[in-house]
Image (cartoon, rainbow over all chains, first blue to last red):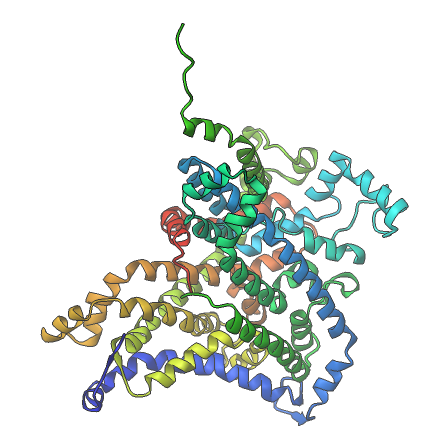
Length: 316
Length: 284
């Protein structure tokens, strides 16, 4: 704890305020001011210049009737579902590595999992974009090579009638409206998050071998062990990751911007609320409306953060 | 007749591990596959890649000129990004140490209010900030400069870094500060001789995180930078991706070059990083 200070001593130490000064000015200018400015400008018709016109809540009324915004919220909820599913491999991976008896192998696998982190996130995205390329891309080659393509075409024609896979046409993963969401799902396969796996492993380390041996004596199988021993121990981390993931997905749009472009790809199928805000501001020049969309997102995320803070107690 | 040798239990257990090894190794291999593709395609030209997409080509036919081209292409971008990342990280951490010292050393008048002001920002979503931030940088005539990226990175790092560092500085024994004060050390001298040496590991971890964050950022550079000479890697790679006729070999070489500074960092900090995360050092 910091020491309480008599008023006299505090006055003598006034120079200490210079220590916090720069941070304070920076945070006020680049964090608090933009947030307030966004709230303020969401009430104006503003195209970025000096001229702006007070429109009250018109921007929010427009947002209420904005079909693109509604669709984007639907898309982002689908993506949240995808991302929650994508948490599973990291959890299973951590459990599998933890169950190995050899410490040396455990360390080796941890180190191998860190290796992909050397690739900048942007480059990973572009490599996936390259994998999705209809003619040269790895994905279509794998589908052709393994014969999975025939299966997909057959399923399309006889069972599901998606109308996206055809026998002689390479699927355009990022260029066919019907394939945009599947591509956003496939992206990043096998969906191992390095940081996630390492954090889960840290949580699992507290299980002693006695617990396993006792469970084995009781005849608990591998699946039972997962649900009764391992999952309860990492539940805090899983819950925290889950909330952070939902928030990040809700406000993120870099992925969609890079893979699909600023209008959300073919048919706008990949449009998410953040991207719509970006699009309105920097493509259409409707800064006031963009601020309003931003405020709507802001409200959603703030509610989630507060709920998280209230119900998920995370030890510091 | 010798009695059958009893297997020791550890050996028996580790032999039962092989299905797990198989699954883990499979996943790790798929995880590393993009890295492998990036490396082996970078040595081929487009025809070589189409003929033989999967396996590395014969080293005798490696197209080293891809790497030369890539270096010429992304070299300037890397220089710009290193400038922003080094300056941004050092200023961000430097100011955060000063700020954390302010909160941790004494309970000054108003420090409670200021602390709440900082902590509130950890709860406030920043998603709506980008539009006004753009206008603000325009007003300050910082658009199309690297300084805009540096200053926003420094500002953006303050809350988290001060939050983490304050806890660490408060754990330093008070006697150290008091005896330094007796010897007439100023606050700056106390920071340099006590705080920085004793919290070096956490300062290192925070620096890596900050550096990675700046290195991977592309949204802000995308809206701030206009001139090709000023491009950071983020924007540079986006423009490279936008070109119509693509020489994949050159592009992959450029991608790999973009990763080299991170490779250097991880080579030196791998153990620290794995240990830190495994012990749950990132509690934020």
